[in-house]
Amino acid sequence: MVVTDHLYRSNPDRVEGDLAKARAQIVSSTALSAVAAEFRLGEALRLGRGEERSGGAEKPSILADALEAVIGAVWLDGGLAAADAVVTGLLGSRLRVAVDLPGGLDFKTRLQEAAAHRGEGGPVYELEEEGPDHAKRFTATVRLGGRAWGAGSGRSKKEAEQAAAADALDRLGGIGGDVGGGGGDA
Image (cartoon, rainbow, N blue to C red):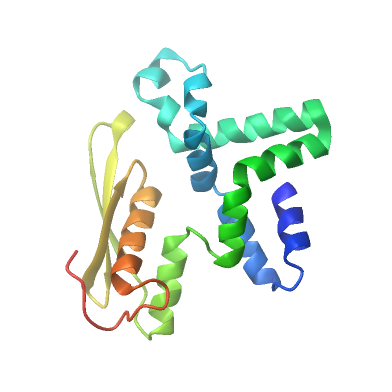
């Protein structure tokens, strides 16, 4: 609610679709877990032995949920004004990035848009996984027109695909990059 209100009030001239993309990016589990990691929230969590041994304090889903719980506790204890102050304090830089670049750090969406803009077929992601169930590591390669353009890895399939899309966008020169020529073979 705080993010939606902030985006709407600070950007009255923006179209609804851009604001919706910005909001989705800011409140995504990826963004929330990154903020929680920046503030080392995982160190303050009390986890069961099994979750502790498997690196639960660093799992993005747990970190995102923990940050949402902290914000909820602030709201219950101090009301909307206190929650607003915490949310804007924690997410302020992300609020600005998301407004300046709708889709923000959602590299998969940006790559999809870049490919469509240039008349390319959609990105195709190939995934590999390794490690035991409690400590999986995923590696993704993204292809456009059959050519490998980016690679990335992460603790989840989504994280690996986002990293691969970011790599591809970097090789392509960003969202306006020339998807049809040069580069490739990541």
